[in-house]
Length: 230
Length: 410
Image (cartoon, rainbow over all chains, first blue to last red):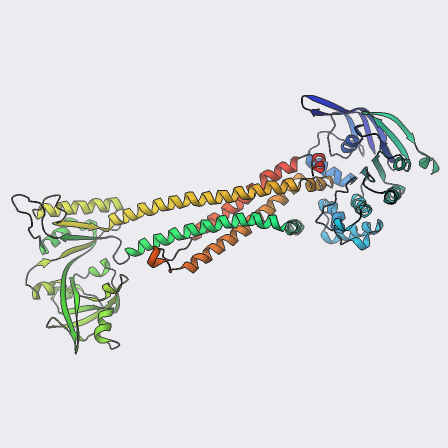
């Protein structure tokens, strides 16, 4: 599903450049539940941004769904993101003036689905995350956990190949963290590839594979107990 | 391309941000309002100026004589100059192709009497063409004709107010009127846009006047309308030439304005034309300045708005929005606001102008101020274009920010 070979990325900082990713090789198969761990500055967010086509790599090859990602422009990557990827962000990134339902339906708008149909589909997904009764509430009327569940519904609504979650529990307390992780596990059980970035061991332990990143290189890549349990 | 979903997005965004939408709309509406008022008021001034000369034909000229103030060829100053049929015919033959209408004019003041009512009125003895030169409007009957002149008929055309004075509501046409002792038949009743004074007079044939009152061929003035095909400059040149020729013919010093002068409407028209031209130029300058200020105002607001919404655009892009859809959304919103607000300003402006109407005519010379369709259409196009520009440039920039940068924005 995701194949990365000798990936390099650096950011210019003044005259110098900061070498963030220094030759990453990573292969994630369909249906995996992977977490990337690392302290801040390890390059894990950069990796997720590149995987999520929100940023462009400098060197190396990146295949998404067997398609080489190269010479992307904003339009092409927008289409690919809409088709293959679902995002869950630490800060939820819901649009404040749209209701939960409209937020979930937004990716379907960019897919070109009719309003009636997309609201129907969005409601199904809201139901799935247990927020059907909150469909017509604005984000500021929801708790943090509820917002993140709306964001997860929004990530799932297009039936993406991969769900990318950047510190999905970073802004949540432990109870809601568990409910969000349970949700991600359910998604994975349904066969979707889930790719989580976190710096919390407890979160990482609930995934099936942990990739540890330090100073732009992978230092370990192992399966967890959770995967062995299955 | 009508995209209901797109419009829904736009109305949601406008509704969510009422204050800034209203503010940016206000800037444009105010600019257009000022623009409309400025244009309307100047057009009102222009109408007043045109109206001031509406009494007479736009192409009228008059040859007037008085006393000489300069000695010439041994003739002394203070000599009284008298126009006669000779000069009238000279002008008629000499400048035939430059003249549309020509009439002589003799001024008299007579008592007009009908039954027991009588009053003093100014009488003008004229030729039939005078009707067109003075823009006399015939309400009843007819104006003088060539036959009246040839037969030196005792016929009279009276003004609307003369009729009112002497006849009241009773019919006057065909009645016989006592003019300074002799009996004239009323053949017509006229009105005139030049005001009451122009309607409290009467016209009689010039030949009749010459025969009865002095038995000579004197005339007071030659009135004529130059050929409307002449340009203003050509008409002015014609007036100057006629003035020179007539002075030469009548042994008057070439520079003696007092003895003989040609009053030429072309000169006044040219002056008014130049004045209005300058006024319009100023208004266009000030008006476009106001518009530009409005456009800059909305551009500023759009830049701020887009800055504020950068993160939202980042989210939308992460969810699969193409840059073109973001630009389209912003531009459409901006065009919508500018067009609606501009239309509001325009409507308010035209409404205010219609309220003003003719109420300022007396004191401020503003008559029927209004804006022409051309101006309205032009302003609308400017509005839509400015909305496009105001929205497009900042939106294009925002849409090209990498989503990762946009998402980080706060």
